[in-house]
Length: 394
Image 1 (cartoon, rainbow, N blue to C red):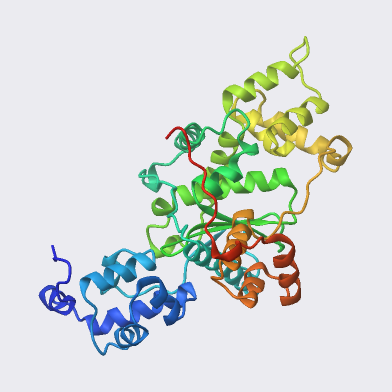
Image 2 (spheres, rainbow, N blue to C red; image 1 turned 90 degrees about the horizontal axis):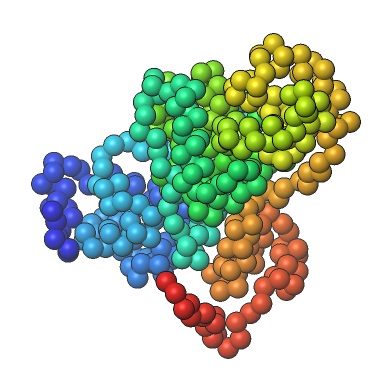
């Protein structure tokens, strides 16, 4: 172990590494990824701009304590800067059904930009907590339907999602698991995407064109990919999802959103004296679990209420007739999460970002930003501190 203040260059020589070839590159790489200026890094760490510049240009080396301060500011492990592994500038974005090449690149860039902005706001507001999604340790080749459903059961139990998980899944992922969820308008509408990154954590992209119950299913589907990212993304050849992996993700989503026992209770309650359901009953059960009727039908196959042949007959029968029964309304979701916007408002209120930067984060014009700041942000008069509430229990 190195003692605090140990000369870092000596450490590199001891390990047989060339710091000049990697440290400066890695410092600049991470700073650029986070969209930070040297002045902003200086303000966060107390390290002079001239020192930061000299380190990035490999003119001299920081002490271990100084590098630790930078690692903390960048939400990185010190070992990341000591590594001589080549940098990978491009995060993998995993698609269910990838759009055309040009369109996919634009959408991926939007997703990565939004996730990076979100992380930057978290840093500015002192709330940059790491993603809390625990990776499954089960190898990809050991996954089957039972394992996928068990994973869904464990996740539902761990986060107390209850009998109707769709109603709370989004808030749990955003607030407790620290997953960044965005909505964009793109084609094809029947797809979604996700990504994991060392610097901003985990992010999910949903299609704002889809109705809410379809987005619920997409959210659960992409959650499976994030939970099993290390298992299925083990090699370069696994940058794209396979048909088997997609099937497992669907099984996970169905088990998570329609747990066996609550679903059984709902089905038995809707059945008539002849142990039969009509189409109105199907739509009522789907409404309760906030999923599509088609997702419900195939879940009924999994739980052995109906056969696969009956499921196919039902799908044919209700094709084009969904609007007759289904009166659920679905609002268009905002691109950015509520917490993202709340952090942006906090940052502008505290003077951490400019009006122009606030407008960029919010995706609005400067004039609209000024109006929103005037209407929604209350100023702390006289530079005083926010009021604190003392709790009577811990």
